[in-house]
Amino acid sequence: MVDHPDKYDYSRAKVPGPLTQEMEAKKLEKKRAQKAQRKQREQAQREERQRWEQEQGEKQRFAALSDREKRALAAEQRLAAQRQDAGTTLANISRCWHCGESLLGRIPFHYLDFSFCSTACLQTHRRARAGHT
Image (cartoon, rainbow, N blue to C red):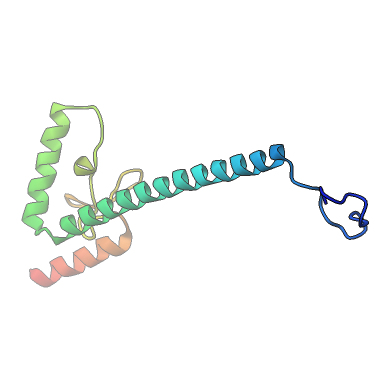
């Protein structure tokens, strides 16, 4: 089209205009911006996945503890909370006594000295406790 502008009817053939250096530069810049956005999005997804995996690991470790260990951990957390009133970390979060789910931002269900994330966890714990006595 650049070499023979009058040879064909380019508008009827619906052929777009010739690429100029300016248009190529804009396309290249746009691709670079999209690539940077994609990398940033992937990095954010990776970080979110790592936080989720860390929370799941913490949840499984807590659920695997015996009742005695859970009580000891709760007591340690209360002592640590009394010593410092600032900041909440994953290690200092109250958790469901049965499944280990974080109770942060939730209204827990209480039964005696235990806290649960749902009524299902509470009922399961009560049944298991009734079976032990």
